[in-house]
Length: 452
Image (cartoon, rainbow, N blue to C red):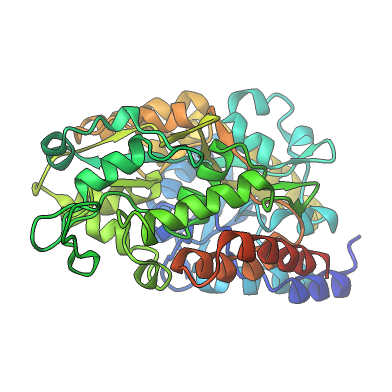
């Protein structure tokens, strides 16, 4: 039995801020922002009732449809509890420590290890022995530790390049052929970005009289975005993010990549100022929907916002992430459903049945068919692709991108490390620190925070 006082103390010390949120259909950058805590409905089946907790209202209708079929097939009813992201990680350790955690609940990669180490989670290999082969491999790998799998993949995202068809065609840019090389004097990303960036007088970066302060159109969204920019570009330049739960990004390749990303803002002037993007992570997404940004590297968590925001203003499409010396890389995040190992013995049978259902194609199809996000089951992914094909968007590029994955954040204190490192990254992006000065400092302070 887990020591509840020890578990609660460790969570409190960790300061689970959810910095590495993984994907969420309504979240900006994966942060999820469902409404207030609420009961998403559910019934008491002939065998009893189970509880299921998540942080996003947008997924509730899909789960209600899924659970209705589960109840009919199994005899177990399921009640849905929605706890918003802002409260989710505060309430979870309290509920786990008091024994009041839901039977099954959503979990992300930055937070599961402490729960696993406290014996609070069921090993999915023992619940669904053949499940891993059916699920998105990158997500399975993310939640595999010490020989166990600690969640059933539910939804996931990778990274691709959104582009404004009108702008790139007028500029003669091929979004499928963009690459960067920090060791070269120029590259296709910098050239494309300069062509797509225009100031108030119609001049481009590098031309006489160009005024960066009057830019009305931008080329690319270089910014301190861990998932969409930093992770993919570090990996594409051959840098390693971490090893054995310790940051290693301050390598020569890492410092080189960080300086390149910052220079796209402060030297090349093809990306918006970090004074704007540091304060508002959605600043560049909004520029894109306004038709003022040609290239926007991001994930499927922004599909609905872009589709709704652009409407009929212009045509847009998707391409592979920008390539680097090591090719294109895409950081993959995923949300899993975890089983409460501390639940009453009489609930364990139902929990295992529910986890098995949530891992099946049938259990996940509503998530795909309602356009919530890419489902974890590989055979259900086509339904999500079909949803977007009907809107004229080919999202299969995200599936291809997931095959070349950069390192995601793992470790019992991953959130603490990111909380310490990201403000220093922002100082590099805004130009107050060089990468040579700031990135070793970020690594040192991040590792110290994870070791506390």
